[in-house]
Amino acid sequence: MDKYLLFIYLGAFLISLLLTWVVRHWAIKKSIIDHPNERSSHTIPTPRGGGLAIAITWFAGLIILFVSNQIETNLFWALISGLPLPFIGFLDDMFNLKPGIRSLIQVITAILGIVILGGLKYLDIGFTTLEWKWIFTPLAVIGIVWAINLFNFLDGTDGYCSMEAIFISVALIILTAFSPVLALFIACVAGFLFWNWPKAKIFMGDVGSTLIGYNIAIFAIYYQNEQKLSLITFLIISAAFWFDATLTLFRRVKNKEKLSIAHRKHAFQRFVQAGFSHQDLLIGQFMANLLLLLIAYFCVLHPSYLLFFLLLSIILIFALIKYIDKKKPFEFENLK
Image (cartoon, rainbow, N blue to C red; front, side, top):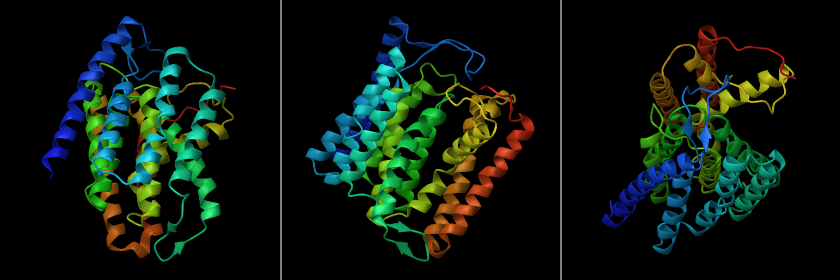
């Protein structure tokens, strides 16, 4: 590895680490604290907003990669377009903005990102490649917005969101090739994870979770457009996140619950409620992700069976959720 790049990654990790410490003390001083309630996964008041350290380090690192010609131009501008998300997330962490304002910024950011990438040009489904750009591009905007909120929804317990972001980035490197921008992303998130590891000393907050979700979605679309990795394979390596959130949302809608009310019904939350520790959750997450990575690897070896492998990954995650259902049943109370 180039010593210059190694210096960038090490610097990003250390700066993220230091900035998270600074943000933590600032959040405590300003009383930007998550106080536990009946729907919380934590038991002690904990400062939030640590994702600000990730955002500052990330955007600074992106600029360094760009000026040193270590990142493709369209990918750089697509990722830079995510800048409004940590900004609005930071304001939301401090002042609890109206959902409409957050949603508007998310949609505008998603549209800008997908336009810079030239839309979603292809969809490789294994036995053929569909070139329905004008259908896939609007769906990609919805997908980006869903990813932004997905990581926000599932940033509910120590280390969980950070570990998933790091895993997906490592998986992309393993399944494609080493990428300076992915390595930078890993370093930025890892610096924060040091403080977010159980028992967490600070939470990420919207300022970090929304940016991570956006970045992950942009990576997925970029790799599909460049025909480096199918979007279907990406759905496999990220299945632990999106399937849990999607199934939980479906269950709540079916139960006619008011979706704006906070809850603790995601599988990962109920896993902790069942008596397992946060570290047990991270170990389980790691093992499940290893299985998903193995399935994704077979996708690369046998691309004609992409849809079959996607179905297999869904069955795997569904089986794990049913196991959690037995330990801590999904409560169908009506919150309307």
